[in-house]
Length: 270
Ligand SMILES: [Zn+2]
Image (cartoon, rainbow, N blue to C red; front, top):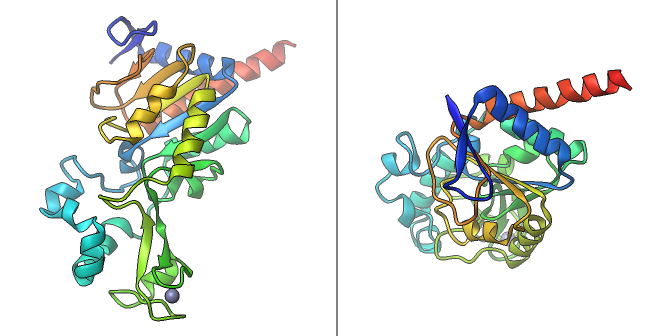
């Protein structure tokens, strides 16, 4: 397998063998002071979370998936909405994969300043990440539409098919951004700030097709290095310096190993 590297131009790349791509990203992480990760569904598919558009994804199983994820369906077809939601957004036993764990580790080492994610599955937090900017909300958090009382996923799992607030009897909804709803302005601003300040931006598991989330990347500073790890080729609004077309978990795990190996040999030499 070959990897592409370019100098601030997506169309100006040289092929890199895998080991060199691993080493390159490890070097860039070592050089960087503020790494930001921007991720999409592909990060979680390796944990068994269904994505939307791929073969085993939600759209392949549900012909009304997009219509189901609307305030209208939530309010006026609650049985159907919750059957859909419980099936696709509340699966049990889903665990973080190496991609989540490596990113949490980079944050713990003071390298990574934020994970900006389009996912709502809480897996970054489960892996130990603290600064997670969730553009589309969090599907494991719920609240009452009437009194705003919060509920966690265990509480909602234990409730009837269409859950009701135990305080006021009101309707409960997941804390995600449905179609036709706006993104949270504060989260967007924080994500924008993190991306503007990043000197290394790692984009993973996203087709960059979902706006306005994908548009955030256009705020990256021209001097920042940009890496894309995605199995399919995508077109990007920002220039990309290194493109890796393989599953993100195994690649990032190897990058962390490379980072540790060099750090260790460097330390031994002093
Ligand atoms: Zn309530």
